Image 1 (cartoon, rainbow, N blue to C red):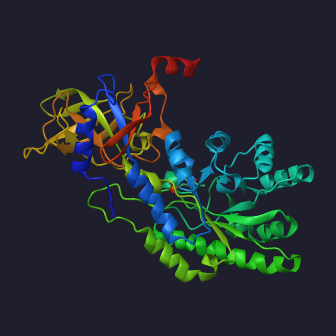
Image 2 (image 1 turned 180 degrees about the vertical axis):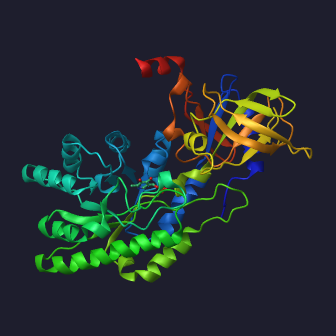
Image 3 (image 1 turned 60 degrees about the horizontal axis):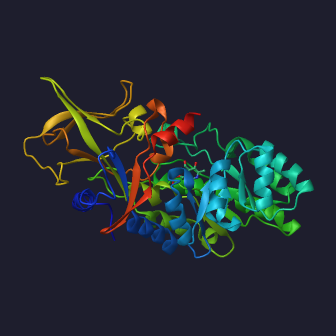
Length: 426
Ligand SMILES: Cc1ncc(COP(=O)(O)O)c(C=O)c1O
């Protein structure tokens, strides 16, 4: 099974693209490529290892490209919407209500009413939200399954800004301090039939993921024991996303099967027919399935430093620019024909994005073969939390996105036009 997209594949795909002026033109200073076959295979992995009735709600925030969401829907998985607009997109794509999970810590009354009428799965983030839902349900019929997001308080992972299960988190209800109130809430609200946790995104170990499951599953067992008398139970267990990926060529690739097997071994009942599982993987599905290419516009060759000026920066790789030590993307240099530049005599470069602030830097002191104007910089593993976090600073146009299956390459999103851009600010 393919573990990542190799440099040769990238070079070949890019050469094919360069030879087709319907796919790329001079104005495409940067382009993003998705390997659609590979993306499908990532989905197949989770579908194959989890129980058949699992609802895999792929996190839209990782990659909301409409064509790709259509592809996901066609693969019979669901979608996790973390905002009302994401819910709108999910509905418009045609995901069935059963396959939509609506999360968000700031759902309004109106948004909740809408989601309840639609009958999507909802995870409430707080006691206040549960009260809101309760009020709405007094006047509205709904088929929604409703869960409560628990913060299992297993500690932060290695990346602070994407860890959400530390002692203090803006998400969910803290399990340690609020255990009794949580149990009472389930007893008092008959509409609650689900539970949810999510620990963070990247930088989370399998041990932490398992510990989170353990703490929440123990809580579920206690709640279900108490609910027996009412003839009801928590049936839907949403394990969230957060399975990490590898961004470095020489890193070990985290194996989701190990996570699954450990979880199943520890909590066999959770993986029995007693529960319907939901997952919310995003990064695992998308991150390794895309690469970006930018033309090198200028090379500043000073005696003590060399700066490459390219067309993607903090607008596309926001996290990398603002938290450079937390994030990494491998870089490859192609010549102007798309051939991989090897060059034994490597030089140190700073790779600078196009934006008007000093922090718009993608790499410092990176060793690369000699780069000249007109070469291309490949940025690897950009399939998740990149385009979806696009920054409007300096009003640069969002680049074209191509999708490919081997030599079959198509445009899945056009480059933003100047008019589109103008309308955005209007
Ligand atoms: C509630 C929730 N679910 C799922 C995800 C997806 O996480 P990942 O892309 O790491 O799988 C996130 C991302 O932060 C999230 O906040």
